[in-house]
Amino acid sequence: MKNILILVLLIIFSSCKNGKNKEENIVEKVPTTEERAKYAELKSEAWNLYENEDYLKSAKKYSEAFTSLGNKGNTNDRYNAACSWALANQIDSSFVQLFRIAEKGNYSNYGHITTDSDLTTLHSDKRWNEVLDLIKENKEKAEANLDKPLVAILDTIHQEDQGLRRQISEVEKKFGRDSEEMKAHWRTINEKDSINLIKIQKILDEKGWLGQDVIGGQGNSTLFLVIQHSPLEIQQKYLPMMRDAVKKNNARSSSLALLEDRVALRTGKRQIYGSQIGRNQETGEFYVSPIEDPENVDKRRADVGLGTIQEYINNWNITWDVEKHKEITEKLEAEKK
Image 1 (cartoon, rainbow, N blue to C red):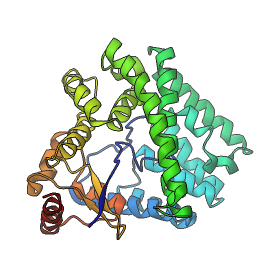
Image 2 (image 1 turned 30 degrees about the horizontal axis):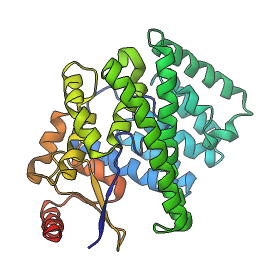
Image 3 (image 1 turned 30 degrees about the vertical axis):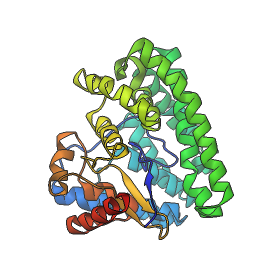
């Protein structure tokens, strides 16, 4: 059984071509476990429909997800819905979602929304500039007290880090998982990662792990993302720094959980939070990489601000089954011996 570890990102599947600027949420009351599970299931279906280019069904499925929470929903999912409505040429419905996230969700990723080709059909509508003005205002407010030169550097790194990764599924779908085009794409990603790592290490070594109050939410996430993609020895070097940053509220505990999992697996241990997804290269099937004490993984995830394991793995169409997970773990660990 040939397997590979999927490079799981904190913000993967967050928005159409990754339009997320920070973890924003406009859900006013805490939903029940059942409501969260239903919402996660529906938005996962919507995302899969989007990736299969069935945009109208995707948009309607997002609406169904929002309805399941009393017409409330995550800002990033509403951005996704806007993309699907726009691609389905349902302009009014797309603007409904965009105005909502701009006015209530404080969406501020101006750089992304102005370059997102999914929304091209909206550009000739007078409402487009109205939305952009709101988002630009949000951005200016959010960055008023930030280190703007450093934010600009990190923004470029973020776009480079995520831009190529957003294209992975598209390249694989077009040319195949083992194609020369796919291999070339990964080489390009690795080259860009190496360059960005040098820049991030310089920032970390000179300034430490800076918080959102200095570099903003996206800049803060960029520090994590680049380290998350780095060689094991680099991850091990900065893991203590990130642990300290979490204690000082300069990094998210949920991001640290992903790095902890990555380092654990790469050093021959089992992961703790179930954030790392593997793939059988022969069958193409996804699975959750080995977890320590899988029966209690949801409790540990809740402790660091992560949703349930089932909510998370819906993105790969995996059903959480503890006994099946144990069987897969036994096979994987037996192959290593």
